[in-house]
Image (cartoon, rainbow, N blue to C red; front, side, top):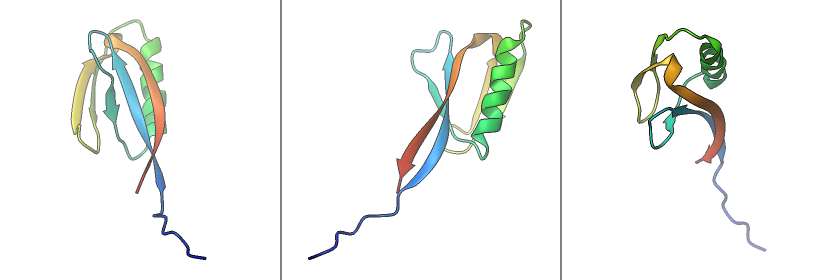
Length: 81
């Protein structure tokens, strides 16, 4: 019986940011996405606008937005080789 080669699959977590007025969500990769997720959730609770600038890893390197424009935030796990 032959064994099939299955590459080692890894899981990474992406932060998905939904902004008002944007057609598609923004997918961001951070070293600690859970901490950024909690920070954005706290910013969503504040009634006054705050300018947010984040430096991420991956295709999107830097993003700036106003906290009142956040429609939602989520964490997404994805597998990669």
